[in-house]
Image 1 (cartoon, helix red, strand yellow):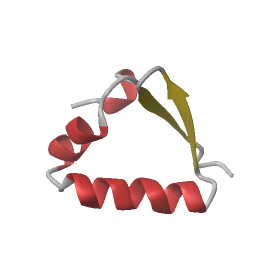
Image 2 (tube, one colour; image 1 turned 90 degrees about the vertical axis):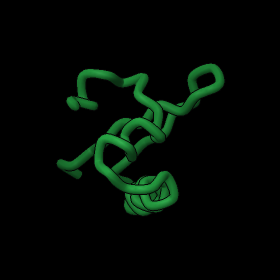
Image 3 (spheres, one colour; image 1 turned 180 degrees about the vertical axis):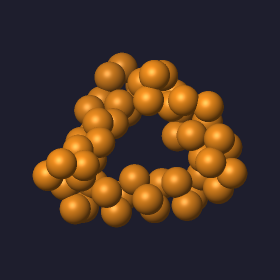
Length: 55
């Protein structure tokens, strides 16, 4: 599953595709946010994340 091409993919779906729990996926997202590698933007009722690996 190519999650890069589906920006509206829910964290639940990404976790399932990676075969990890939602809790683990959320912990990974939180770690990336704390190290400024991930930017979160609220769009309607969902969050959209942008990953910055070059920084």
